[in-house]
Image (cartoon, rainbow, N blue to C red; front, side):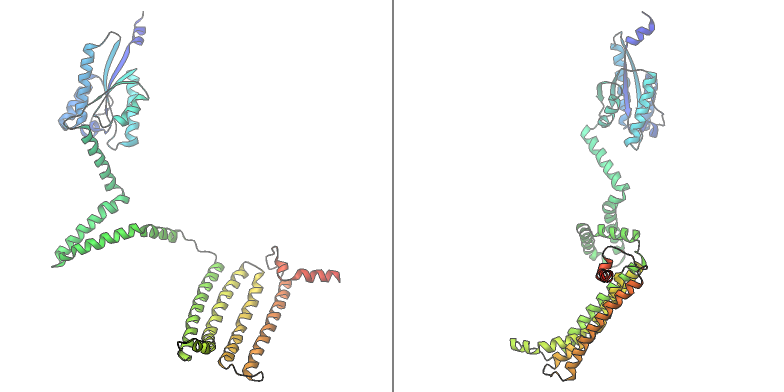
Length: 410
C-alpha cells in the first residue's frame, strides 16, 4: 500500500479554538488563522501577558493541553492538529463571515474530517452551527474561568443592551436624554440661590410631560405632521382658490350667524318665561335675526360659489354656467329676505301696503331672474360648445335633448 493511500485512510482531527470577538488581533496584534502547537502556544502566552483575565487565552491553553494529551493517546490511524480562528470585535455577521473564511483556509491546509471545538462558553451557540455546517464536530470543550457561564452571559447581555442604548438615538433619547436633562437642571438650579427647592417639582413636570407625550402619541403625531409638511405638494392653483373661497365663505356665514343673534337680542324685548310670551315675540326674533344675518350670509355663499366658478372655468366644466346663474339668484335672494323680515316686524299690513308690495315684487323679480338665468345659460352653452369639456349627461343637464328632438320633428 502506498504512502498516499495510508494518508487517505487516516482520521484527521482538528482541535479548533474560536475567538469570536477578535481579542487576538485587537489586544495582542496577532493575525489568524493559527495552525500548529507552537503558533498557538506563543499566541496564547502573548495574549495572556497583555490581559491575564482574558478567557480566550485560557481557551487556547486548553486547546494546546488537549492536543498534547490526545497526541500521547492517539491511535495509528489518527492524526491531530491544533488551530485558532478569530472574528471581529464588532461581532455579528462580520465576525461570522471572518470565522468561516479562516476555517476554509485551515481546511485547505489540514483536511480535517472531524473537529473538537474549544470555546470560552459564551460563543457556543453562535459558533457551533458555522463549524458543523462544514466539518462534523465530535466534541465541544467549554472553558469557564473564575466565574460561571450564567454570569458571563448576563454580563454580555447587559453589555449588548448598554451599547444599544448608548449608540441608538431612538433609545438614547429616553434612557440617556431624560436623566441627562434632570442632572443638567439640578446643576442649573444649584447655581441659583434657593432654587434647588423646586427641583422635585421640576422632576415631576418633566416626567409627567414625557409620559403624556408618549402615552397619547403626541410625538408620533408631530412626526407625521412634520413628514406631511415636508412632503406636501400644493394642489393646482384653481383648486387652491376654490378651497380658500370655501374657508372664507364658511367664516362669513359663521360671523353672519353671530350678527343675526346679536341683532335679535338687541332689538327684541327680553322674553317672558311662559310659552305665550315666547310665541308672541318669536316673529320679531326671526325678523331681526334675518336682518342681521342676511347681508354677510349672502356674501359668504357668493364667495364660495365664485371660487368654485373659477375652478370650473379652468377645468372647462359645463357646470360653470349653472354656478354663475346660482350666484345671481343668491344675490337677489337678499331682497326677498329683507322684505320677509319687514313683514314679520309689522304683521298687520294689508295687501295695498308698500311693505307687502315689496315682498311680492321681490319674489316675482326673483322668479324672472331665475328663468332668465336658465335661458341665458342654455344659449351661452350652445354658443360656446367647443370651449367646454363634453361628458355624458352634459347635454341632458341643460335640457337640450328635448330642444334638439323638437327641431328634428319640425
